[in-house]
Amino acid sequence: MKARVVCQDKHEAAKLASLIFIRDGKETFISSILNVYGTEIVIELKDKSAHSITLKDTIQVEIFTDFIQSVLDKANQIVDIKIIIETVEITKG
Image (tube, rainbow, N blue to C red; front, side, top):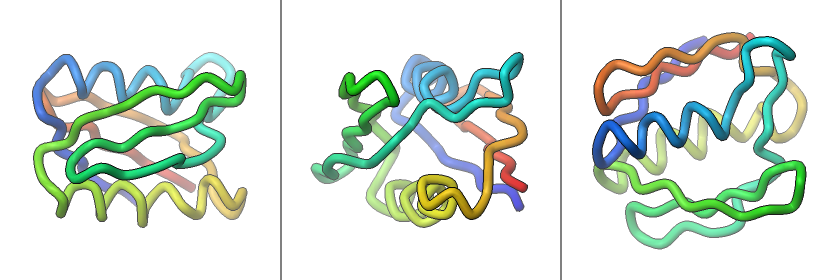
């Protein structure tokens, strides 16, 4: 299953992709979504650090939070990430 999430800009897209998934270890670093403030999502990583990502609009926030929830619940895992300018394409399996 794939989702495309549009970020505020290409820098936010790169940050989101790097925080979600590391290819070598096939590991997802996000452990939870701490809060949502409009178009900003605050996520907690496995190392207990918190980071914010700004998406294009609230629809993108809904797409991302709905998509990532099964990964956080350990029902699915992220298998690939692609960055296309300000868009992050996330694939889970």
